[in-house]
Amino acid sequence: MMKRQVLEVEKIAQFGGHKDGLYSVVKTSNPKLFYTAGADGYVVEWNIDQPDQGKLVAKVPNTVYSMAAIEELNQLVVGQNNEGIHLLDLNSGKELKSLKLTDKAVFAIERMDDLLFVGTGDGWVYVVSISKWLVQSKVKVSNESVRSIAVDAERLHFWAGASDSIIRGYNIDNCSEIRELIGHDKSVFALTISTDGKFLLSGSRDAHMRVWNLDGFIETQEDIVAHMYTINDISFSPNGDYFATCSKDKSIKVWRRRDFRLLKVIDKARHAGHGTSVNRLLWLNNTIIVSVSDDHSASAWDVKGL
Picture 1 (spheres, rainbow, N blue to C red):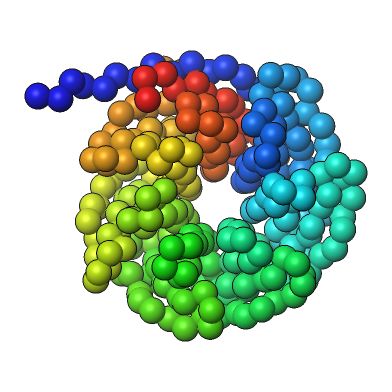
Picture 2: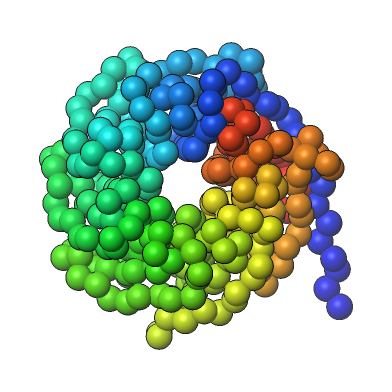
């Protein structure tokens, strides 16, 4: 019989200074640094060892729901409501260029090599070349918002989760549709592909997490009532052995990839967790998770026993 895996969680830092809810957190090549953004339009750099010393990188006029890092150039792509995407130089804080893709919200940005996949509030995914800084292709996914994107680099597909509850898959090269995944009842806010490339994980406003087997005919392998309310994000540890989910129910949950077993709940009562919706997660390394919340703050958690 397998020994039960017991995790201990320590809150190692809290990062305050934003004036409104946070919706995005990303890292670049420096293992100590991460960047947050949200409804106040501030893009802030934080050092895990100096939580009281946030550094303002940029201020944009509207809400930021999504960002993507270009680590090798120390640049950040920021999705700004009503104004498309902006490329920021993290050394100087200057905007290098922008691309007005839409006058709606930019809810999702994912990167693969030279390509950005940008999901918008009017139901489009734009495939943008970073080096040429132009739209290479685009596809109308839904009449409702595209809320999440996952890129399958192995099969050269991308998946888009929409507010109509459907997940749709496309070929990267020509944006031709390959498959519709129907199972959720409400908006699909979270999509990610397991580090080994075998599974697509989705999280929805219906509080369910679905695990889709990407080998062969794609179907639901697991359907888990993972939270009490909306699942906002699903994020894998760098080594791929674990993943974490976060929710409008104010909690973060840590799961084991091998058997999709829940190992730990991080919440306000037990760990001085967030008091409002937890919107996005980032693994700084294989044990430290950073979370951002509607409560205007970010928190860092050291998960022992993984």
